[in-house]
Amino acid sequence: MSGFRRRLIFSILLLVLLTSFSYFLFLFEITNEILSVETIEELRRIVIISGLAITTVAVIGALSISFLLTRRITRPIEELSKAVKAITKGEFDQHIKAHSYAEVEELIFNFNYMAQQLKKLHQETKRHSRDLELVAQNRTKELSYIYKISREVSSSLELDEVLDAVVKRTTEALNLRICAILLVDEITEDSLHVVRSQGMNIKRIEKHPLKQGEGISGWVWDHKEALLVKDVDQDPRLIERKKEKYYTGGIIAVPLEAKGKTIGVIIGNNKVDGGQFKKDDLLLLTEIANESAVALENALLYKSLKQVYVHTISALAGALDAKDHYTRSHSENVTRYAVAIAKEMGLDDAQIELIRQACQLHDLGKIGIHDYILSKKGKLSPEEWEEIRAHALRGAQILQPIGFLNEVAELVRQHHERYDGSGYPLRLSGQDIQLGARIMAVADSFDAMVSERPYRKAFALSKAIAELKTNSGTQFDPGIVKIFLKVLDKNPELIRESE
Image (cartoon, rainbow, N blue to C red):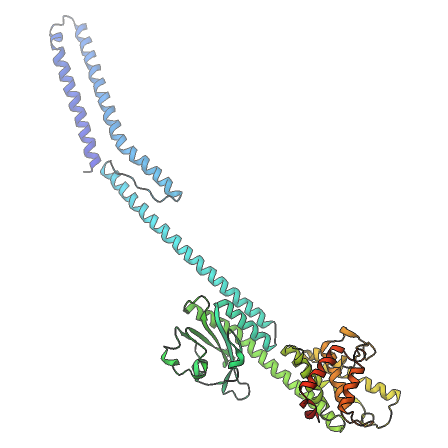
């Protein structure tokens, strides 16, 4: 039997006993009056009064016991109700003191246990939520870097631009001190070369190729698997690092694979904040490598294709030089002078390479000019002179359809423009003429002057220099003439090489 039922039966029995005791006590008190009653009416009055008194006592007793019993139940239920409402508002620090019947006490105990469990669950959920939020933020950041890399590398076919984008974004994404890309030699395919790096001097290491299996990069290339090392000086696989002594501490490295072929390796060395590399870092670098490898392979193919085009067209230009004794080696000489000027001016490698290609192809348009005009010893007729003048435009027209040679074609088109605007074919002047074309104009004219032609002997060096000075500011950019004369003074071997 439950505690509540026992208390209820005990209370009823107590009420009966109290009522009976009150009744007998009352009867005892009024016995004398009952015995001395003379009439029925008086007896009836006494009985009614006694009944009312007994009933009143019984009702008061019953109400008192009911109130006590009810209060013992309702008070904890009220507290329980308030606590439940607090929990629904997220206030989990609830605890009810149990001073009631066993059933209610059990309910309160279960509630308190539930509240504690809910509090723990809520705290655990908040902790997991923070962890998930942090993971989501990190993953979003990683995906952002991967998207940036994918967008940048896919927007260009130029190898240098792709390499720059990959190294820059990888360094940012992984917070690296050093990042390097090594590519397999395109010709021999038996060695790795550092082609781009950040955080170390590439000039110091690019001349030291690595064989397959040699050093850290060679190990990754040979095994074709990603590598995570906390300390390269302690890893037994990498004790014999030989030429890669510039790597210290933690390393992550991933092979660059495209179309089932390993074309290189990408390496990250040490974090800027001093932290250790984790599996998540290696996973991110692997994803970057997967995105980058295809773009690098396409850039390498594009570079190869460009070289084929340039070699083909250079062969045509070489054929032109071969059939004309007087212009033989002219393109090489012009290239040598122009590149020397460009380097003295501090132009970047891309600009120098553009000028180099334009110089090699600048007379390509002469391939359509009759041999008798090119080798004529006498004065050219107006018609023949117009034929000669057309070669700059024709050369540009030959190169124009080849998309990656558009800039080269423009330099070829402009290399006979004059600084004062009296040149051809566009009559451009001053800074409107591209810098590369102004450099080519000086180099081309100088080599023409110091070389023998059908219609005249070669100029002496002093006379050629005097001509450059005389025409500075009219035919030639005066600043470039000044730089070229400085180059000749510093490097007199340029003339001997041309001879």
